[in-house]
Image 1 (spheres, helix red, strand yellow):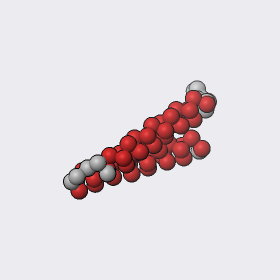
Image 2: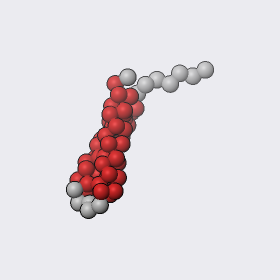
Image 3: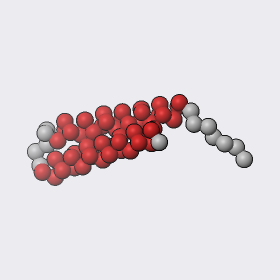
Length: 64
């Protein structure tokens, strides 16, 4: 039975993933104001919130 040791790579990967989600959230937030229909605005708002939640979840995994 082998034991996998935690490494700095896992926290580094989590940080990079969190940063990419934050970047995607910012992009979606900026696109909301460029939309004309309320459906498009709602879609980009949902996308923004989903990416923010994912970035927070990755941050919690890195500290756990």
